[in-house]
Amino acid sequence: MQDELNLGLLLFIPYRAMEKAVLDALAAAGFDDITLAQARVFQRIDRNGSRITDLAEASLLTKQTVGFLVDQLEGAGYVERTADPRDGRARLVRVAARGTAAVQASLSVVAEVEAQWTGYLGETRTAQLREALTMLREITDPYQRTNQ
Image: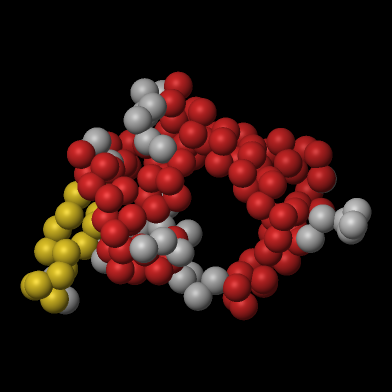
């Protein structure tokens, strides 16, 4: 058995820790009705809105699953569906006012986690890590958005 963890797992473990910190903070701030699955779809919504098919592809989930999660997010006031200005037959999922408030509530937690990691790794290693991961994104993220 291999003792060394693969890079994918080494990337996922800290991501999962940040994700948990954000969800815990959101729950404490009154956004306690958003699930992990909903959050993973929510964070992929483009600032100009996203189609369900695009969210499904980026989330690696079925359109039916994403539609179900978006229905839940919409019912809780985190997102809204609007007409797609490029195609009147299509609908876009957009972040609603409550979703924007949740995002704002999460920003300080993300900053705290990154500060904790920087304190542990040091400024130089953190900058190198960010640079390396940004470079790696070029070949691993076909769903790059401009609002991230």
